[in-house]
Image (cartoon, rainbow, N blue to C red; front, side):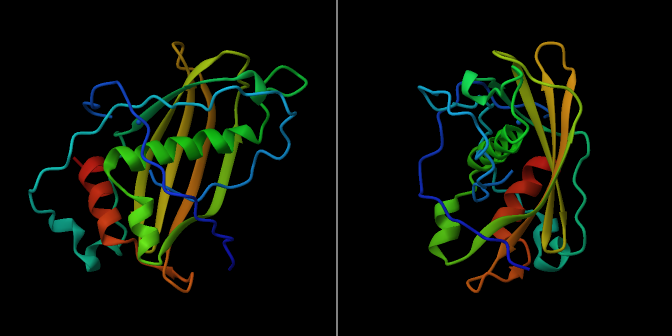
Length: 213
């Protein structure tokens, strides 16, 4: 199975201004080219996703981070999410005045990137070892449209299963909290030969520390 991995340049994580989440905004995955159908409207400034800054992990030991345990289907807390707030831009609309369907894949990718940077997962560090991470499967279920200027939040949660990470995304309008989209991404870790391998220990430890606490 070819995954078509593309590693992007290393950029520092965006500044965030909100306090860390109490009980609830994964992953730095290579960007896919889902936006080919956009209509060419100008976007003067790039989106700056807003997400709470996660406190640095403490030094307490994690018994569940052993290599043998991570690969046996580690289920994390189903009620803990990482929220990332965004706003619809004009260049993301189609001729019908709603967000183009291809743009939603970009929304949830940005949310995963924000989660990764907030948890201290460095794509530069992973790339420096010759390894990579990629989305091998992505399913989206569209429930309602987003319109010009709409504020919304992408809620992200993760489950580790063997060599895969299952990442769930829920997009809701703000402040109404109307469900707009449900999406599930399967993320795999790849070795230097771009073959699937177990979830990298440094990634698993940070994910488990946040989503299982």
